[in-house]
Length: 59
Image (cartoon, rainbow, N blue to C red; front, side, top):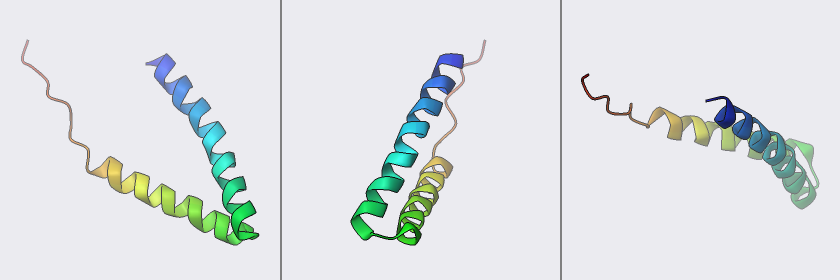
């Protein structure tokens, strides 16, 4: 559990600024870059809300 939370934090810490910089370089605007990252956040929330709870077998 600790390893997966550390890995996801490191992944988010790398990809967030990378995507922000990439979108900022392409559009030459921080506003557009923030819109791109907020759209990705909404997309991730929509995907996460559609996930099913894992099946738990009876002991």
